[in-house]
Image 1 (spheres, rainbow, N blue to C red):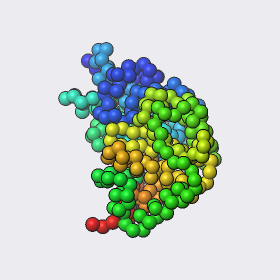
Image 2: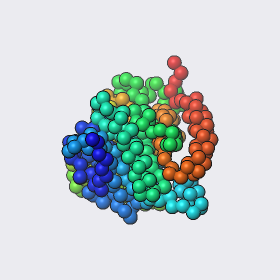
Image 3: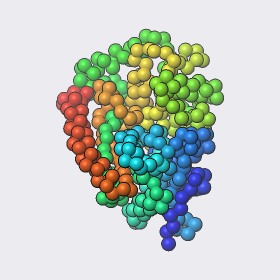
Image 4: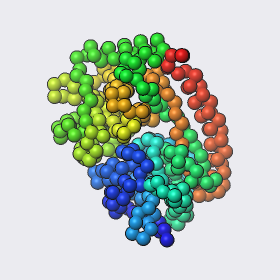
Length: 377
């Protein structure tokens, strides 16, 4: 018999058993990443996050799992449902708390239904989804949401779940030998613009380098986190990730964490932080105390592209949103989420709105592809 259990901390689940269920080495799904969020003060009730991880057990054996959270708001999700929350609350309902199947603060596509690779994988995905719906009904929650799903996970969500899609911009490695080879694939205007931006940074006298997590000491992590925090605060956003999280991540994941830095002497003036798997580089956090033309693009995009080429990675995902990425070699890629709204009438109304949204998104994605930065061959 398979039993569904919910856990208020990922520490309740053995790291080796959790990681054995992952289909690849996506760092955001690792026990180490999720545990670091919880133990360093990033997952807190006052931030709107409470761990509620779902596990399927066959006796004492963990056979399936899902990173799950009870949310008191919609911050840190990157699939925006604020309008749904407003509509439901205007109708007299309570939209929060809700249930979320996702990785906190990380708009990264990856497995959300962790089932390993067995003959029972599809059935276990369906069992996880059914357990989420049952938990919504059991606790009287408004809804459940699963964000940034892989194609393998999508069939487990039946017609009770609403389909939603968005666009991100990812860089594809087409077997480039070096950064110059990549530039040669772009049209003349885009190639010239990138050379100009990189030249501005080189003439500034800043030293630009990529550093692995294992080589960064406590003082450097302090500077890196301060840059992240001040940049978030300056934009009116809440910097939810703690300095302890950055340090812990570097210690746990080592060189799977990479940081592009701009420094003069021992002082770091700007940084962009990345995580990597065996096939993908993921851009994450940015911060700077200088306003230097081209520096953001150099650290957040060009250093990442150069690193991906050097290390033979298949693609580079620099984060959510940003049409400006198209001009720098990134192409539109569809992302997918699924949403269960407990109230049938509310669900039907949102379903109609999503049909209209989907038509717009299809047109938007097609228009983006018509403005590819790559030369016609």
